[in-house]
Length: 369
Image (cartoon, rainbow, N blue to C red; front, top):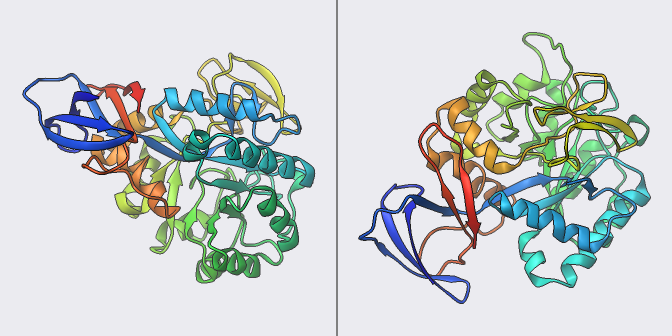
């Protein structure tokens, strides 16, 4: 297979030859293609879509593939299936079903190389808790986590924790020692607790700027603390609903392109028509704009959009280049999770995305190889 496209980082036309799933050569093209080529996107936080939740007690292996196919249509070549705060049984079933689906399908396993556990060891306070069910938020329990890790066949690679929970620091140390990336999120921690969590091994912040109180002290608060910490990466949701453009720009200015990453945080209701739904034991609503909220409130409950839109948005919101926007949604999360980073070079896997794009416009995914 040979195709001609503009290289996402250089804009120059290239001819890419693919053989047996790998890039055989990349040479200058004598054509003027309108399509662009870039590494396929990687999202560290996909909770489901089309009414399918990885948390569901009725999750089936075929539904896992459905979510993968929908993500693929949005340029997401791979992602970390994410399970959120719930009962022990719901989380155990979700991880076991994911592991079963991946064990039976090598291609699916390539698309989902690791899992993310967001909770249940999070703040129970209104605001930081977000839409996570209060009755299931709890203190860290290593034995409980190990049972989920066993069900997941060892694939839980990221865990989001609120460092103020009792026992959280020792838990973070054990996670780090076992090779799991620890994220701070859904937290009401003090500055000292956040600094202690980083010393214990925390590496990133989950969707910084969200999962917060509506009103914070203007100087001493957990948002500034995480922003100021040079040892913390930060993921941000740039779907146009979760963060205003000014905050996106500030976060990227502080963290820089090398310590930030994009997630769409697609929820189980992503792709669903407007209306009211029941998820996570909570009444949720999909608004006509695609925004998902706890019904009757302004509180967000995951995202109704996917990573391709987030890439388009971050260029407009923060003025970053196409190359940087795509790297925020491909190379950076892979690096954080210690996964191989896709490059457009001979010998590399052809984990590529073809898309249409004009400056100032939205990326239009054509195909993921």
